[in-house]
Image 1 (tube, helix red, strand yellow):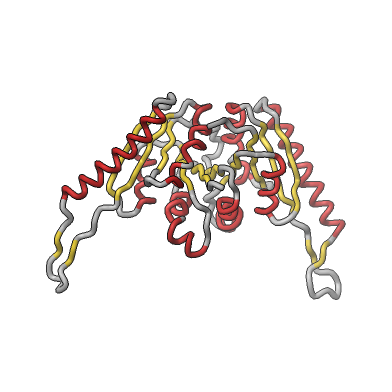
Image 2 (tube, helix red, strand yellow):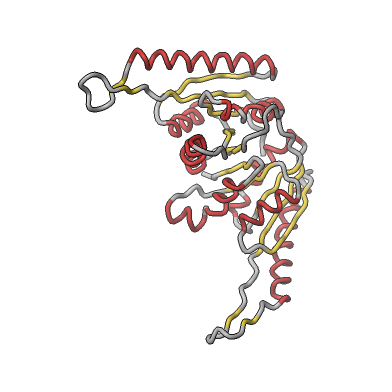
Amino acid sequence: MRLFRAVLVPLDGSAFAEQALPLAAEVARRSSAILQLARVHVPIMTYGAGLEVAALDPSLDRQVQEGEEAYLKALQKRLSTEENLPVSGTLLTGGIAPAIGEQVRATGADLVILTTHARGPVARFWLGSVADRLVRTLDVPLLLVPPQPEGAGPREIRRILVPLDRSPLAESVLAVARGFGRPFSASYLLYHAIEPPLPIVDPMGVMAQMPDPAVVEGMRAVAMRYLEGVATRLRDQGEEIATLVTEEPVAARGILDQAAAEHADVIAIATHGAGGVSRMLLGSVADKVIRGSSVPVLVYRPA
């Protein structure tokens, strides 16, 4: 476990994207990290006289680039003054998600923070394309921040919910969650959702035998022993840990419900970052949590 050294915030020039900045600045300040601002320039293509395909308009493209560079410089200056921390600003080129990924590798950024969950075209841009691609390609943690009320300050991180399913993949987020929570002196809630057995229906479909309560209690006991084993190791390292097991047919729903009920400020979850069939079979829990959460979600895809 270690604190973050460089926090990268992708921006697109909108007030929506800038909503990630208060929390990003707070994380950077508490971690003694540099705050990196990045914007990806998309070349300006136009249809000239007699052209059937779009072509680069060098003059207009340069004008737009200069405006984007001025935006980053102004924001960099304001944040470094107001937040009293080191801030850099870089205008990138190329595909949006690949350019951000290359910037992470080039600068050594070890946390990326961006806003998600808007409605309309912005949602399709940030969540459906850029954030979705970053979740599946970056091997550094990604903090996805839902829109904040106008004028809201940085969110205080007091409690972090960590869903575990007894797999090494799920446990891989623990070190990341602790590195994120340590500067805030946060506590942690380790959560496991057990899927209750389905009723057994006879071949004629007339009668259904309900699951034996002893079986369900046995599942609960096994899950709690597992969580307490993990919790004991972390408590021995000075962390404040609570554990919780509930019955939940849909794990993602249980995670979201318990985050609300337990007043979690962040959900920290691991994902394999796969697409296609693998995403449907194994990534659906993280996917649903990211899309349904009203609190920031710290996502980690182990290399």
